[in-house]
Image (tube, rainbow, N blue to C red; front, side, top):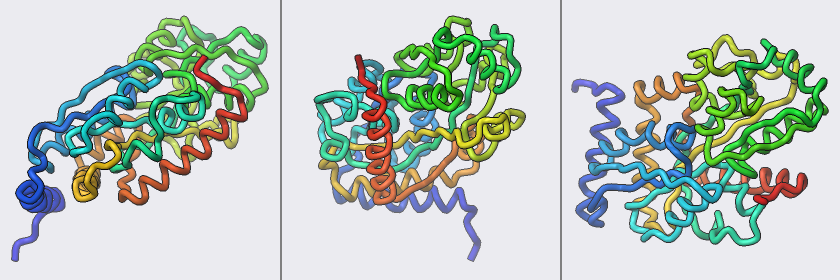
Length: 324
């Protein structure tokens, strides 16, 4: 019997499952919308678009990306939790919003455990330390010395209060013993533009949204806050290699569905995600963008999300971070 290639096997398996499921449940009966709580161009948007075509092929329907930025992610998140739990609406959730918003807001209008159903992991993103090209520094040690000579005078960007970038900035300042001012933005893309333009000095964020600017000479990459170097930026040292041991920051971007979505549909989407993550072209795109693929089962994704709620929430409360 002729052997199928891995890609052909994944596609054939997806088609085999999709047909019976549609016949039994009527799903999917229309395109699936993926709500993205950030503007185009950032890590959240990249994660959604990375899986868009593969999901469409595996599930036998169109997949539409709907960017709804604002309110620290709450506009898109609330739209997701209020959507019909029929498998036609998904949320590309960012770990900073998932764990951060409930810790910073008295009532965000949604509860991560009650209102959202984990579906599967998209990407895990190590963060890089990026600075304005106008700064007279060439490495992390130089930037740390520059910051120490100007306590309280430098700014760092984030995609919003309580985001992983915000937490990273707080932890970075503590690690080097220098206070820096936080400047929140509505997503990574506008923050990067201001750092590139010299209006903000530093941004600790995912490489996927910054690589183009780094390669174009409009942004300096000083280090990656990861255990290992990022293949997309092989010349950039880890924070430990650059002299800041123990400074590790990452974020995840994952698919969630409204609570109450039928388990068989959740499992079907999860299988499609894990199948997509095995495709060489998708893995290559992820590597080029500096993110990792970590295919998880629904139960494993639930465990990761619960752990993030606990750990990130604790850091936010201990540091008194709010949305004000």
